[in-house]
Length: 108
Image (cartoon, rainbow, N blue to C red; front, top):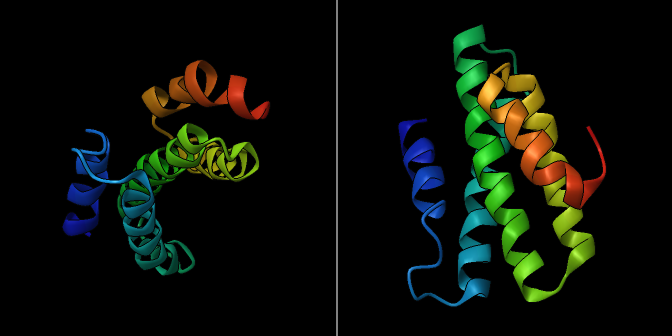
C-alpha cells in the first residue's frame, strides 16, 4: 500500500514533461491495482488510507482527460474522487470536494 500512496503523491506533482496520455495510462494501471483493495473489508484506518489514495489517484486521473478536452471521462473520474473523499472521513478531502471537484462534477 505504501507504494500506491507514494505513486498517488508523485502524480500530484504534474506530468514532469511526460506526455499526458502516458501519465493517464500509468494512473489507470495504478488505480486498477488499488481497486481490488477497496472491494474487501479492511480495518478502519487502512480503509481511510485506501480511500485517501483512491481520491488522489482518481482526482489526477480526472485532471488529465480534462486537460485533453474529454469532459465526460473527466467527470466520471471526478465523481469517483468525490466518493472516495467522502468515504475517507478526512475533512480536508471533503473540503477538496466542495472547492475543487464539485463545480466540475456537480455532485456532493
